[in-house]
Length: 244
Ligand code: SAH
View (cartoon, rainbow, N blue to C red):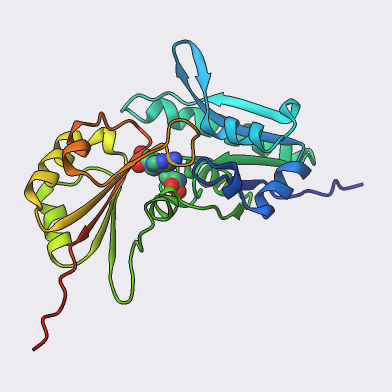
């Protein structure tokens, strides 16, 4: 008899607040038999935001398989880990076990788990994706701002940009989201100094108890250390249209 196979599911967990895990993600995580969950190594211990979220929503620890992703700038080692995990996931799928892998925020928005999905697709295994709340959306809500409104445009920079480029975007009236600030500390500081006609909204660890931080004070922003989970939203200051 042929085994009934359920496609591997890539489940987005949202940025950290367990309340932002969707009902669809929760239901899937409760139903699957195996969940692959990324972690990084810190002081000899695995550190995983994703695992913390799974714990908070009471997912059975027995079915969670933590895998360590090397954090080095050279992504070759990390790619190898993702590729090995994809092969394990393919094995689960072939033998009829329901399997999921998880990502923080939305898995389709600058998430490294795309290496797993890509590898599975290469092996002719389709992946089902469950959408999640990306960090910048949760950040906008925390600050109580409209990230973009009416016909405003939005530019998102993951890293590798320059102050000149950001200034150009903001001066053209766009809202700008800067991510992975830890990789572009000098650019951020120079941008805060260069743009006087802009509002800066700076966030750390949004949705994480005791660690969440928000400020729109420029001086405070330039003094922060820009940890990995930090993000900046920049908007041009709106001027009232002068009327007679
Ligand atoms: N898939 C994620 C993004 C992963 S890239 C998403 O949909 O949001 C990682 C970057 O996202 C971090 O460097 C940081 O800029 C941002 N980020 C993710 N979670 C965050 C959080 N809880 N608080 C602040 N920034 C966060």
